[in-house]
Length: 235
Image 1 (cartoon, helix red, strand yellow):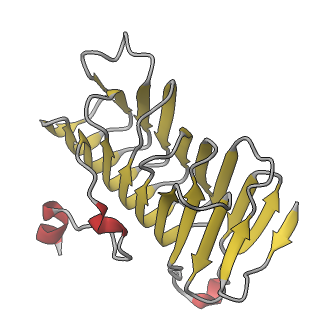
Image 2: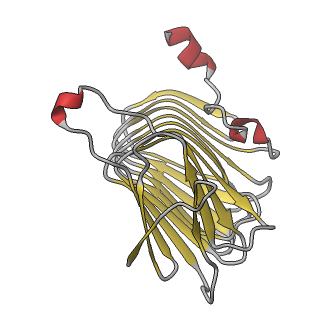
């Protein structure tokens, strides 16, 4: 594994080379981050970060590890590091977050071949647009989730499991206020579908939306993911 430095334009680049698949792992608490796919890009991955100190980037074959800096206890509060990650669409991708969770994350994976999407240690204010799946694709939010919206292409079979309790859940227009037990929902065609999403949320959750929606790139223009009406009421 080797460390990668930014080029003269301030971007970290991972060349495609002979890679047949890609994996990116973001460790240490990503925030104010945009992730999107670019079918015209020739690199495997390109990333740019806008706050100092920038995360460390390491590349080993087709795996990119982005490690956010840890704060010293005397720093008082968590810094927020804004940035943008662009993934090439010539190979399938596995995407993971660990060691600190995520906040204010806008992801549009339209046109990408997705192998898995996983978040450890909690997620807050996340908007995720999924591509058309190939096979059964796992999507995982572990450690709790708050104000998370997941959109998939119309007609895609999906199963959703939520454990640890949930408040304010919407699944394809079905709304649930407070559910103390586990939730297990699925589209009518899930059992027979070969291409589908298997979504699981563990550790408790509130304000979750899962639906089929048209592409809408407004959240990916560098702004934060949109604030839900319930968030506005709580301000």
